[in-house]
Length: 541
Image (cartoon, rainbow, N blue to C red):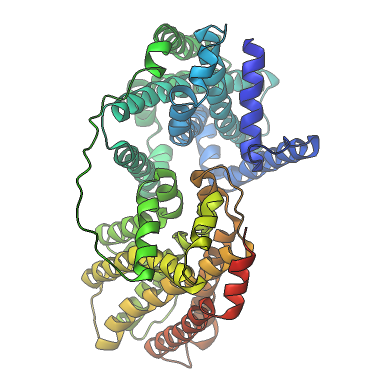
């Protein structure tokens, strides 16, 4: 029975990765073969990328006999990535799966049900860990002239053991999240806060690496070894086991990974029925009748979309992550002494007017962040099977579309203004045109991104996604505005610095780009009210 349950979980996971919807035929052999080929290409790309970016560091560590540190760091990266990406998947698939009660009503042991669900979480964790450790093994091999076959075998063994540790933590955190959300009426708020904490932790770790971890790793190998032994001993043992073919360290590492996993699985299996059948202890809110207030159609549509956005953590974290990223990178620029803009300007020799260049570059950087927000790019797809409700209402397509546009802009533009204000504090020389440009250009690009995303979703979006989360993650029409906005920002910036820098003043150039973007925005905005947009809206089903 366990084999059947585990097979069904893995097939369901494969169907999610291939975009298959419920009620349709499962993905065919060709689709699975495509997934395998894609996985191999990702592995090859990761190996080549790690070798290109970190090969010099790996070579220095290998020269000092500290290659284990490179394996340990790769294991840490795979561990963090797996934990971050599988936390809420574990919560949903283990403790909040819709078929839990159905399976428990059958003659199936709870331990078998739990094992199949934990097995799917382990499978996902092992993919990330395997890729990172194989990339580390390839890099060490390329930089040292090859490693022994026994080291490769131990690397694969460790890649199968380390996911047990991340799976254990994922299950414990998933249980904690499920326990909290069952006892509060603010389930969405709790999940959103935890999502933001996880994103913030990942962001902090990434910035810590960028601020000199690798330099410390190569310059103070002894300190790093001591730090790994004190704080990250499992990774230290794993690194030594692979690099030195140390069987004793392999046994220690295996015990550290297997023992917590076995204890956690035993405890959860004994209380699995109680956990998944526990009633929601949150107090129900009492309905109080109040007078209804009227509002314009467009604003009513926008409020409906905003309510959906704020009540769906996957929608918020996938489509609205750019909002947090914009503010986070702007704050980082302030704390680090405006390092982003300085790095850009450092590539430009003989700047005659650094003040003007700073303000215009800040405007371009803030405009670049506009591409990261993809709310409008999936706003029609998230309607899914409920689209008929909108189409049956006595409203025109342009009112619905402009409402979705407004729901994107009411979130993106205030964030853009906040980022522009923060950049004012790091700009040393300010002029009236430069200040206006710092605010107006990002707003113009945010409008462009929102308008193009909505139009792309109108013409190329799909409506057969099984959930809002899937629509927010998989909508290909979100890539069109993202890539277009990035191409325009980067392209116009490169055009100026490579061709027009000696011919046109930088502030005037920024004003021209902003004026052109405003004109493009107006054309796209009026398209939403055109007969063609109405016709396409009528064709949606």
